[in-house]
Amino acid sequence: MAVYTQVSAEALAAFLARYDVGELISAKGIAEGVENSNYLVDTTRARFILTLYEKRVAADDLPFFMALLDHLAARGMAVPPAIKDRGGIEIQELAGRPACLIKFLTGVSVSHPTPAQAHAAARAMGEMHAAVSDFPLQRANSMGHTTWRPLLERMGRDMDTIRPGLYDRVDAALAAVEAAWPTDLPVCAIHADLFPDNVLMLGDAVTGLIDFYFACTDVRAYDVAVMHSSWTFDAHGRNHDAAVGAALLAGYTERFALSSAERVALPVLARGACVRFLLSRAWDWLHTPADALVMRKDPLAYLNRLDWYDAHPDAFA
Image (cartoon, rainbow, N blue to C red):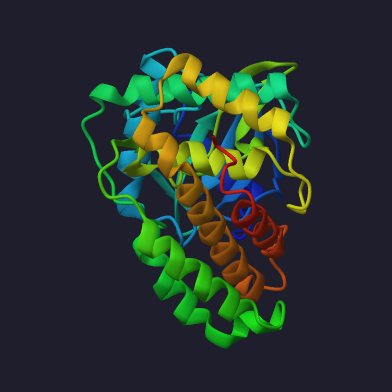
């Protein structure tokens, strides 16, 4: 979450008038994250999240995201569906951007997950994968493995301004991932970005899975690999917590079994996840506007993770 587009109180009040949600009391920009502009909105009736979708989220993809959230919510998953206005419309326009008013979920995201929290969150991912077995829509992964090399080439040697030699290191890692990428694993609708800050918790209980704006149809086990790469390391990617990793895999398989082929593929999927997030963070590091109210994330934290997976090919054994 972030704020790129500023919304005046007058424009927001007029926007809320389309809904049966009460009158505006306050709105505060949310600085965490990098994708969209987000505000915490309080009205005389309730609290909501207002999201304005920036350029990385294509307006044509929003119906997929909204349908997926509605599908999961209908099956009892703790996700934040969009609120419909008085005309039954979910996707609006505000300040020249597509926008949605979204249900607010209680809970906090954890900075240092415990094994119990990782177990619960991964079990929730397994429940999500079970719940989408009959979800009919599909969306290609806009940050899937075929997009990584074009993104690398667009940045080129500018990556070396982040760290000398970074371009060559990532180029070699990507070539290895491309050569080993699996092509015959099960696919489904996946979250593709289930970091700790996209899971809300109270204690060890999951109260919400949020930020589905990279959701897509892709390799199911890749979702597990993304989660492993984001939950089992510290923020700098230097320290790996094996107990969190074991609890995560146990929690997921408690609800949704991994096949032997999926387990064999997890190391390359995890290295691919490291390349993917290293590249997108590097792009944001090089191109985020100086005046944006946004926290840039260190791409080198994923280089450290990549180094760890390279050194521990048996991490998922």
